[in-house]
Structures are given as structure tokens and as C-alpha cells.
Length: 235
Image (cartoon, rainbow, N blue to C red; front, side, top):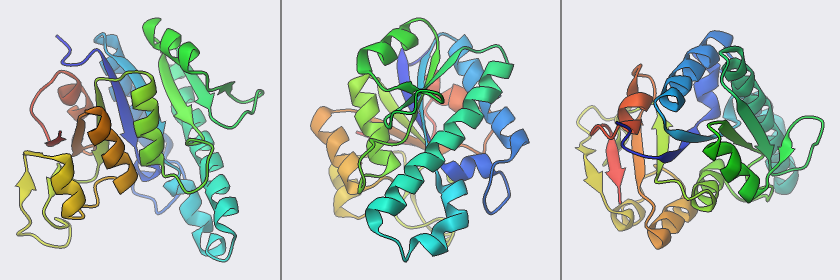
């Protein structure tokens, strides 16, 4: 029995790169798509926001000398590429998807319209939200929070390289302590870099819980969707 009726899954762009420093690893995208497809098959309505770091990292050095707004728009377009890659992998498995872009590009994706997105979810389609919020200075974490609130998702599932929220970076400090649950205020006051402050504050103001879990453990997306206690709950 699913733990949630509707989730918003936030994936980093790096998750699509596999072990490579940047780019898209077809095998990694395929395995991710299989996990997301299994969750949808279990009856959970799934919205997805993918970052663009795996593509943008390749041009990051050049972007440092660019105007911030231009660089942010490049990052948004990178998320469209990733969204199309994930959509294609899902469609090849026979799973209906829709890529909805905040920047209009009719030949590539549907324009994002809230009511239409909800209708797609109700019909069992996986909706992949691309191009962030279409506004510069906003991260894909903030875009994920905004879309989650708009589609009335029960939870934001933030997939990371570690198995939850720690008091310091566990990849650098072996003695770091993991929280099983933590409040929005504690995340903000301790400066824990889980998601940016804007998205945490939006979740706090609208009482939207966040689950932070390890994407690299196979089956974790399903466990989280079924309501199993994995990772860290921010509420």
C-alpha cells in the first residue's frame, strides 16, 4: 500500500551522469527510470524535477564570466535535456510521460500549465517538470518546491548521494551524525546544505514535508514511496 498518493521526486543532474564527471550515462538513466516506473506502477502519482548540473558542469568555467541571468537560463535549458532523457527512458518501458517546460518550446515539451499537469498525474502519467521556474536566481530545489505545492504533492522526495541529513558533511567527516527527523527551523538555523533556504522556508510556510534519502541504494525510491522510514524527514 503506497505511503503517499502523490510525490514530487527531486533528482540532481549528477544522478544522470553515473560515475562520469558530466554528461548523461544511458545505463544510469535506464536504471533510474525503472525505479520510477515501479513506483508509478504501484499506484503513486509521480512528478519529477531534474537538475542540470551534469550538463552545466561542462560549461561551468565559462559561465563564471557570464552574466548571472544568462548562466541561469543555460542551466534551465540543461534541465530540459535531462528531462527529455528521463522521459525517453520511461517511454521505452511503456510508461506514459509528459515533459512540461516552464520556458515555452512547443516542439520539444508541453508548456507548464498547473491544471493540465494535475490532470496528467490523475491519468497515471509521470510528469517531468523542466526549465526550473523560468526565472533566474531560483534553484531547481526551489522549482521542485513550487511545483510540489502547485500539484498538491504529499511530500518532496529529495534524492542525494548520502542517506539523510547530517550535522556535517558525512563524505568529509566520518563522525558526522545523521538525523532521523529534524525541523525546518533547525535546518535553516544550522545552515545544513540540504536544499537552499528559499525552498526550506517555502516548505515550512506550507507544511510540506521533505524526505532526504540515498538514491544510490537500489529500491530506495520505492521504499520511500511506500512510507518506509528511510533517510531523514524534515517537517
